[in-house]
Length: 113
Image 1 (cartoon, rainbow, N blue to C red):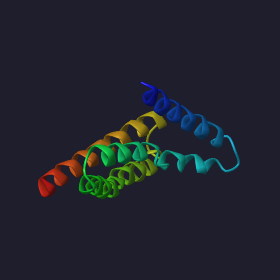
Image 2: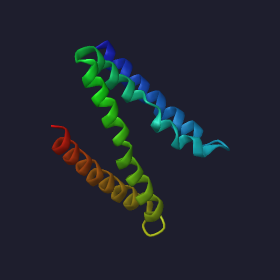
Image 3: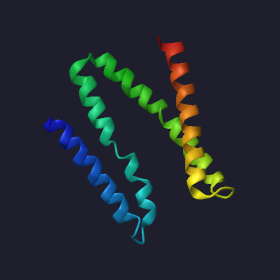
Image 4: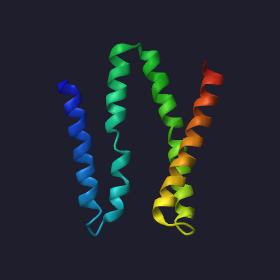
């Protein structure tokens, strides 16, 4: 239970930091904070302590590939904000991310199962 509260606090601190940075002269740094490996650290610790080193290495390699759906989201959003209102562009970007993530998982399970 304590671990869950700590994880929630870390997430809340990241949201506050993003909000504060978005109001500064260097607002673009707010786009870097979501990429801080907060959840990756948690995932790697859990996999590393509950599974084998090989499983952790597989998780790390999959994490490298997992950057691709995020890139799809960013690229789609970059172009969509010129055509749509922001909420619709964000929603469509998330849909693009979801499709790319589905494709990644499908290919990964096909070739690494």
